[in-house]
Image 1 (tube, rainbow, N blue to C red):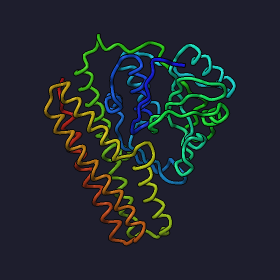
Image 2 (image 1 turned 135 degrees about the vertical axis):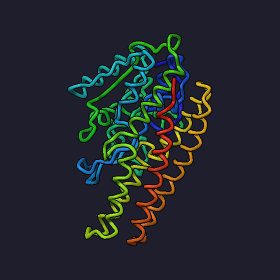
Image 3 (image 1 turned 90 degrees about the vertical axis):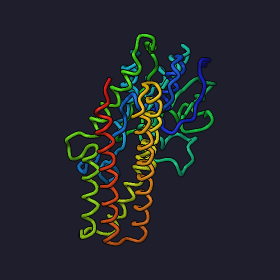
Length: 333
């Protein structure tokens, strides 16, 4: 069992796991700092890639990006391993635990029995930590739960090696080389991460960042006069809400996390502009939540004007984000 470990409950699994891994090495960064350092905030709308028959809509960088980026930025190194068979994966996990390592895993939410039935769905990129094993049960620190959990070896194997999109193939990771902050210029690193995130959100591609938001707004507006069935339109709006509010914390939640990162960056960098940006990002997060509520209302009582109103609300959010990211892109240092 890993003795240098303390469970923490966080809003998002990957940033929470990385925060706990860092704290196990004496680096006291919360999940907002992890999220911001990884420049993980984004928006993507890709109709050609389907999730349960609906277009891909995402509000964060792909799974695994935070782990790799933060460890690289902080001059640490994670050992990341995938396996050909569940047996190899379990043997490697048991060996790492016997060496006292705190081990991160990528799993499927659907096959983790400690999740309530109503919370289980086929999502193969849920991150958690294993800090020990007792007989045939693994001791689990899942950041989305307030307390530590136990999971039978057979169930954890099934969750690690689930098939389908984002299949983890038993992915496990742990510190190979600890991060070292003493040789780093943290204010400069934070400024660079903020500029990089701004560049992502202002990318000149129709499906990414702010332009991706405008593209989604255009599609929603088309529904006002589209011959597609109301059933499909309701499923589409419901998909937006689920991807925004349920899958991996969601659009509004990620903006609240990033706002807290900006607040911390303002203090570390002694930069008042970041403090102001933090307040603006929080307000934008509130508007994303309101947008989701309007989507639900439109699903229940659909009208042609309702689709136009939704599109206009999303354009307003996109315009505010554009202005904010343009300001952050100009931050010096």
